Image 1 (cartoon, rainbow, N blue to C red):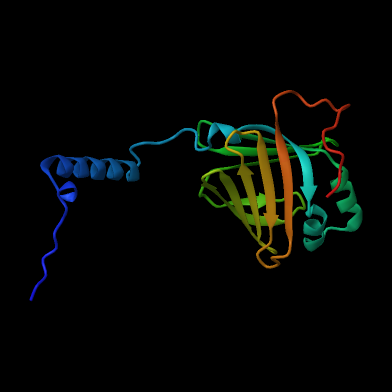
Image 2: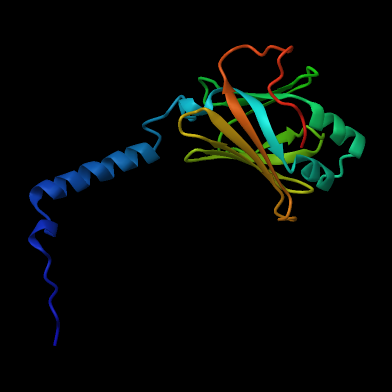
Length: 194
């Protein structure tokens, strides 16, 4: 005894739905074949200047990396600004400035491994991914670090989260606020601390 399935009328395929399926399939194939490229992989709310407002767990994170306590003390006292830009060749630059004029610049393309020298001078193999409102950098090295930038959809805040898969208790969360005006060194926005 074979049981026949009954398909409700609104789910039955018509000539119109068949043509729609064919069009969608061709569009998907075109996209996969590289027929459409976005010159700007990052959404606008991820672009701009962000100034450090609060920080938790950064000292413990640096300690787990083996950074000396005197250097950690200096890093905890600095005022950080992150500048995110993207270029017409689909590359992304993250520039980090400090109140002591120390600058690190990292330029990369999404989903493409690259060699990166971190602020603590480790050389790692990094791959950056974009997932919804998260820009994630996976830094493979000793130890491996996951650096996640979580952006509020209104673009006003960015949370920089450092985690260490080999030591799940270690987590640094640094919250940045958007800055539309040049930094006034006489009026720091971050009191310091880790």
